Length: 188
Ligand SMILES: [Zn+2]
Image (cartoon, rainbow, N blue to C red):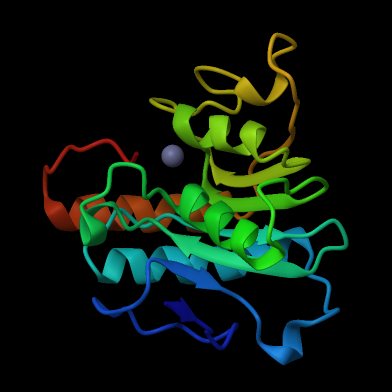
């Protein structure tokens, strides 16, 4: 099931929502989105993830022209799926939207530094650039503990832009884990 959200508003989390969110609202066609604006959209997704009990991480995918292709949020708890991180959810939706696994030239914008699985997905999808907010000192694979985006042994490299609206992305995580009072789980 495809869900067509009204981008810019806070989507209501729903247990019945489809696994992916594809963005195809007519108003978005040909409207380009900058890094900060895309991160704002990713933050909306992150808040929705937190509202449904998942670690609040959200992502957006832009095409080579900066047009929004898809949004995604962490759905690991909601779906009981260990691979349902925000980036993977958003990349799958973007690939579905364009009808190809190759997302050459695309940009992934995510509120938290991607983990090894998600950084691997960026490489696999031939993403041109990743923009992330908060760094993840425990699991980040775009510069913190690994940099899978810039490893010449892999067949593709992904440019990295770090720290975009990092305070907001980090604050959402801090609030979420403070609310759990000692839950102590790693974000991803
Ligand atoms: Zn991940």
